[in-house]
Image (cartoon, rainbow, N blue to C red; front, side, top):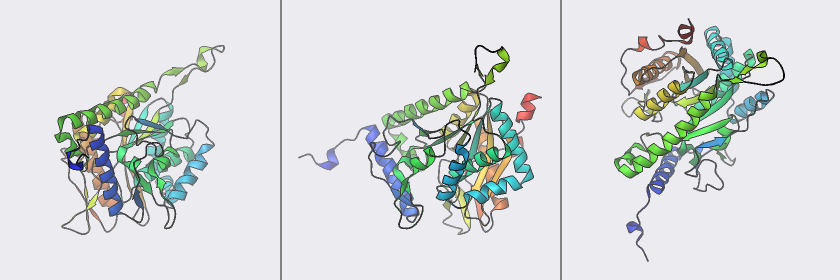
Length: 356
């Protein structure tokens, strides 16, 4: 019999165990809402190591909009107030219009957020913008999500006594698809101390990034809808709205000040990935912040559509979004743990500037 302590795990097994530990940590932090799922790739989408992308249920049928918002409202009753808040804000509706025009003209928009007060905040954020776009009249675009593989190991408890719903099932039910990475967050960055394990993570993230980059590059291309009719029947391949969370560490209450929330720094790998997307296609970034535990829930768009040229602009954007949380969330102070240089430079190259 082999002593369990002498068994050597391969890099994939080490990473999977780390993701399971991270899921258990999230369950301990919020047991009334989250539960760690067993490792069973045959049952739970996204757990298999080779899975880089999980197709969603959305198609190009505009009538699906009501079902998506209804699903989101079922998962969290604060969804509808969040959408309504966006539609009541004249500045936000102007930004939503800019996003819609960009998407339908073949440009891509990365909705860059930070983890809010619950696991569902990023999803509500994305569905909120999706809902506002549809209600204003923009329907022709794709909706994708980029998320960490750890979420494939978590279930969400909607209400006490109900069975947990796999988080990946929630995300795929409200999108065209989900791209998966292994971000170097607080729970996984130690893995890179082993060179081979770090290489496996790097290869995985590179493949996933290439998948999404390939999708983004298709946006803006001419698509012939009818080869018999004149050339003016060509259409532009619509853009993709995709959600990505910038800080690689879930927000935590400060151990020193009870009313302070510390926002994790953006991992350099995440910044490089977003920068790669911006260079891969006609991709702009829109900052967004969500804090559902506020009354009323906070869902704000920060700044305008911005073309990101370097990693520092991503760090500065995140710092500005933390400032936005400090302005609109009551009873909390937010402290960004990353380095910020000159926030006033962020947003200088906007979509309008690029087209001028």
